[in-house]
Image 1 (cartoon, rainbow, N blue to C red):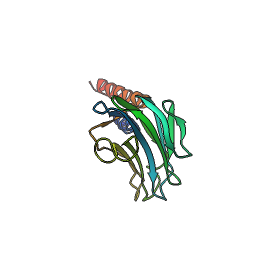
Image 2 (image 1 turned 90 degrees about the vertical axis):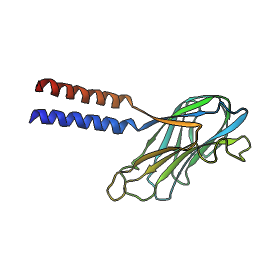
Image 3 (image 1 turned 30 degrees about the vertical axis):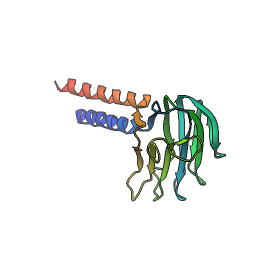
Image 4 (image 1 turned 180 degrees about the vertical axis):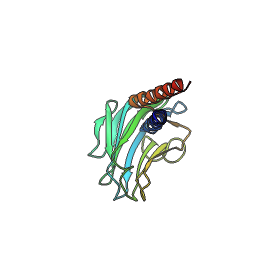
Length: 197
């Protein structure tokens, strides 16, 4: 019975470490094919009944300029880190950028949206506009969208990511704690296998 328990615990540790690893995302935007100045826009919107959530952005790199416009509840600055919320119409931050290089940042979301029963979702979008805000750079629309789905009919919600533009790449970044959890799970599996032989 103890070997079954060890195997079960190891499997759970690996599963939870995989689930936790999707909590942090790294976004990179490649503008090397363009020149001049542009506007990089971060927008976090939600339907009226959505569970409160925050988008926390940090680890910025690239040639960011001054703020063009921001909603009053946005806190922080680029490159230090910014926080946007999804309540009361949502938040936005539009920042000047110098094209011709790579931009990147990390993003994570907090709030109980995945475990709170609701039908109202939230959407975080990253869009690159020309400098006078009259058109998109690259394909029309957002570079990246994060859809935060609530729990519905007892089924937990989650985050779905769409990088709809060839300029943007998104990758999940494992948190250090989830890496430790995965290593612990592998260690328990190894111990279980060793005791069996």
